[in-house]
Length: 222
Ligand SMILES: C[S@@+](CC[C@H](N)C(=O)[O-])C[C@H]1O[C@@H](n2cnc3c(N)ncnc32)[C@H](O)[C@@H]1O
Image 1 (cartoon, protein in one colour):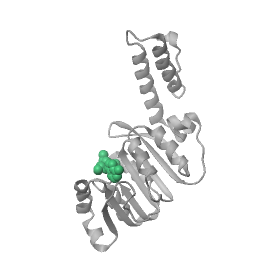
Image 2 (cartoon, protein in one colour):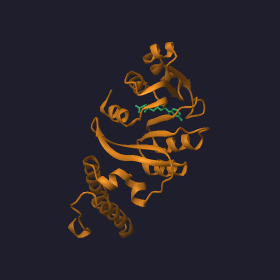
Image 3 (tube, protein in one colour):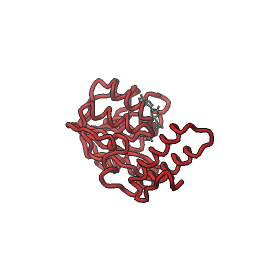
Image 4 (spheres, protein in one colour):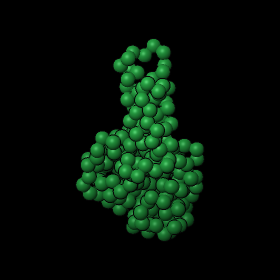
């Protein structure tokens, strides 16, 4: 497994029935079964062709009845499970999946590739509370992983945008990401021909990010 998949695997709690929604290769479900982290696993994907990879990988478990595969758009075709993973998709696709789900499991692990704020807001509106929500570095990129369980929660504006664990604990990966993003925003601000209003927006975004970096700069520094 890649380091991204290993980090995801480490965040999935022990459960009875686990589903990987949009599993593609099926590596996580195999690791869950091999590691004794679940009794049964469901591998599912909207694409039958992608799902074939997981079916091949999990052939032994499927024959023993410990895993089932199903072509499914989100949760539409999935038998009840107590924990599900949705990883490696855009945040808007994850929101669509949560919005159209006929049931939602007790625990969710989400790893959106973008639009993490939309995923956080949607999950909390569906009756989940944040267990952890942080940035990590893997395979040369930055990723966010959000662990949730059923419960009440409410998010501050900062938590919506950056993730609760990042805001509260400022892990190193998040600080590095924030520094990089702030530089990007300052780069945008220096593009010739912008209106003063547009430039201010970029500076504002950079300054918000720099609060987490510890070397906050002002517009005059640039
Ligand atoms: C980039 S792959 C990610 C695979 C794996 N989850 C990972 O993180 O490595 C995205 C997978 O999600 C599947 N997918 C996209 N939209 C989906 C949906 N609405 N329901 C189920 N699967 C979906 C795609 O077919 C594809 O196999």
